[in-house]
Amino acid sequence: MAERGNECRGKGLAVSVVDMLICAVAESRGWTVFTTDSDFARYATTLSFKLHFMWKPKYLFVVGQDGFDLVEVVEVVAGD
Image (cartoon, rainbow, N blue to C red):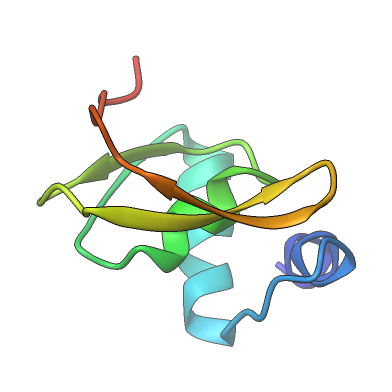
């Protein structure tokens, strides 16, 4: 779990211990995270877990090559 948090922090993401625990368990067990929390979209740019939004956010901040970008969400696709 600490490694996952450090990976996110290394990309400039602020993380919570509880969120990283959820991500680590989902990643290790191959589970999908169902959430309404857009923080998990940012974590998913660094970590490898499946993500499904329970709602469609209008905008998300994501990590790009040149820092953070604000992107409009056109379509949300559930993980395989």
